[in-house]
Image 1 (cartoon, rainbow, N blue to C red):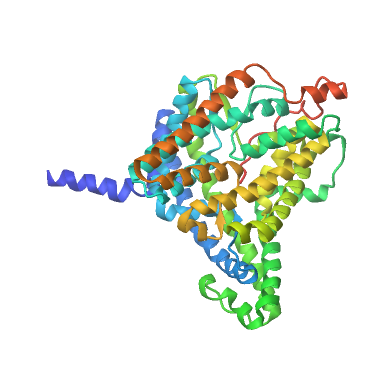
Image 2: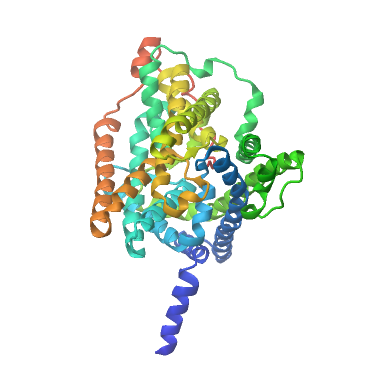
Length: 503
């Protein structure tokens, strides 16, 4: 029997504990269930495994590019500053929690299918990268409270399953308003921002005209490329912080920022110092692109397998898709929303710097173009659907405030991961992570009970929302349509151009 024990130990220690192999195995199982050919099964499993390894490679690049920036922020402001980037923090977390994330994600998806099958929340969440991000957040926060691996996976899987069906329900009255139909739901963990934007639009824009009745310059549309937006965002932030750091500490200390943790050589003069800042910003863009490619490689195989299984388990359920699914319905609102959200981030950064950091020790959260573009753009669409131009501006601005303050609160419960100079960027990661992180401070079984109660409260609220609001056909923009003498708002007649992977 010794050989049997040896084989079992080999499977557990060398295969099932390695997240890259585990993802490949799960992908293969899903493809087998879909009756794919042997070549498709083998190829899909290998691609998913390689994608996971790419995430780890990109994480190393992210860590190296962020280290000098952290030195500059702390030296220039005396405070801890971060750039919220989902892909970056997920990549960093994989080294320590990879296998737990994988098991939690699988269990969470199964729980979500059961909830979709046996509750009124008939949504199947198909935005795979956000499923991965939320699984990572739950793993990091629960593990940080000192819970065992089994508790992290079991409780985290239940919470993930709840979030996958609950958040599309909360947003669905506004999603139906945007799309003009009941054929698709939003499956993106920026939902709190979208609901706030839609509600704000209803308040401020009863007679405001649609954003689609105005023209915006084509020159801003290059920001839709996430790699370009990321690199440009970090380049500008790096240069700004480099100049402030140089002015505050002088050449001798500033030039050393790129040595040490960053792994580079000290700058030789001011010009070299500034150009090293430019290069680090571009390197960050490359690092995130590598991680994104890894995520997309995994999901290109894993999501179809999940989708095929979901169709068999929950027939007739609504697919919950990525945020850009709403972009074609109000393209001007996307750009207006991005600019308004970024402005909200800048204003919030000022408040953090002058009030909340000194008073409460909250980290400085620097606005990044990618989260503000994708969540701000979608918030602009939701705000426009209920409040026209004013709704798009005010709603997206509030989204920018949310995705600045919520990550700052989240950092308080991330433990060692709060020192990584990056964190989760979208609204739902912030409020859920902060809630369960603080609940987990009760420790042991009491902490788990409180965390589960939070999850069941979210589930119950979503069911109430589904039964009493969604299924009754409430239209949050009906009053605006009546005020403008319209049956439908401009921009709702368009059909979505297809799913796009966002940050």
